[in-house]
Length: 410
Ligand SMILES: *Cc1c(COP(=O)(O)O)cnc(C)c1O
Image (cartoon, rainbow, N blue to C red; front, side, top):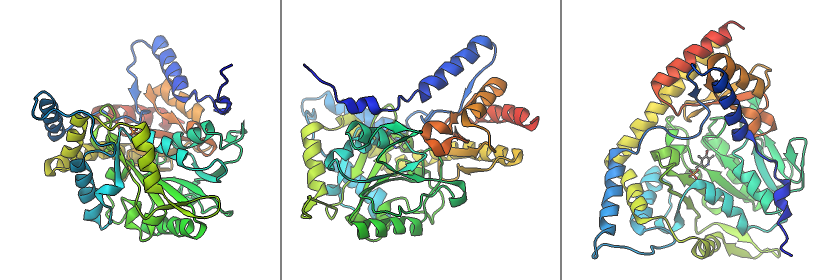
């Protein structure tokens, strides 16, 4: 008899996006003449920049010629791309990361989800609340948690991210082995200072713990004092893995390319305390289960790191950040506390005691505006909504005018 991995039955059936879609459809059916504006999605809206398209096309052309055709590439990614990443994203910022420490992949969702395979099943895991659900669900699937009860999985150390602490989790009071962090944060848009990250690095070093640092939104950082990589913090190379993605950085959500940095100095331990190289383990895992990213996509990714590419992606991100500014201004005028939107595409809005689904329904029914209810990201999000800046300035202006009309009257 073929039996199931019953850990899947523990998964809290996430109806979040299906539930949102259902409510939006219902609204549209009863208001066929109203135009819905979607500020809920975490997906880019601008097309790939011209430099990236040129790189992409060059890659495709090479695939059409005998002399330049390529079959299987290196599982780690082509050296031309890893060298460009190491130079532009790390070495230029004083982070001593080598091309050999970079693993190119088809995105950060897979890597953040797959990485937990390298750990034993009896580690203690600390996960923020609210959170990008992938970190949690992949550990549930692997059997590292108990059942789902009162909005939480048993056996996970949840780190509450609260308004009074600027949505920065506290260091756990009991030792943990694995820590997931994401800055700039999805869903809150909160950022971490150098000192705050240094405290986590110190904690990990003292506890022989590992930090999985998701930097999918680092390109949105405009405050030059904020670190863009955890490797800007001394000592981080020994205790942190960093995930990056070209999805939000360069519009690659449909093109698919990201990478993970696993420094050679990063160690993990056997049950009796001997050191193992995490880099070697991830290399083994990727070479066994992954066959690399398509060559034209890696050429497109390489173009992101050219001078024109960097200027073009910066302009695209500025476009989204200008939208975020309009959302923030509106919320300030209306008296709703919020964070994010300055160095991140998301604005996390306190509903002033309103339940997140109630706030969602109000904005949909009265303004035709779709946001994301905070509850979907964890218990601590129950009284917040997330508004995304991924849309056109025209739509954002229209949406905010409607939201003003609705919320002013209350
Ligand atoms: C969008 C996002 C990613 C990127 O996922 P890809 O698979 O690279 O598209 C990773 N982490 C977070 C928190 C995200 O919001």
